Picture 1 (cartoon, rainbow, N blue to C red):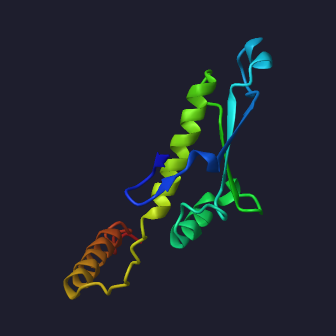
Picture 2: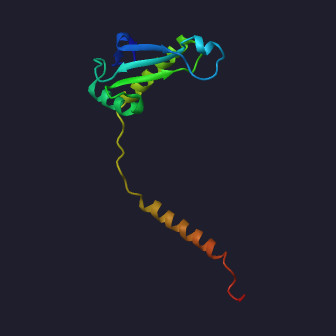
Picture 3: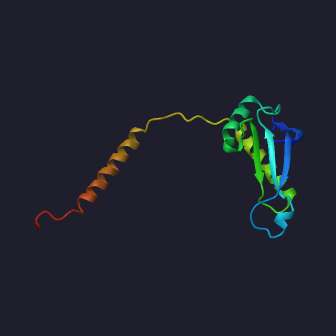
Length: 140
């Protein structure tokens, strides 16, 4: 069991790890060892996630979510397979934690009278400075 938050716990049987060969530099080792990891987590069918968290997670996942609702996280930052596996798992947990927080909706407010007056005064001062940059009046 993986503890994500106090209320969300994911069973390890819901996760599917696939090991593939990493791309990029690495010499001969890169062609022999499958050190990169693809973590698959079925967001839509997971019994561990509340509905609200599931919807936010689908929105946050973006292109990492397949049409079937499976979240695919690829990790190939490290040379060791186990470290890439941990990295993929950490990224999944971080994504679910982010989805579990209810976003605060911003209420639009009006600027105060004082802030409007200060803004207009600064515009007036700036305008006066720019007007002084022109040619002197009697030099034609």
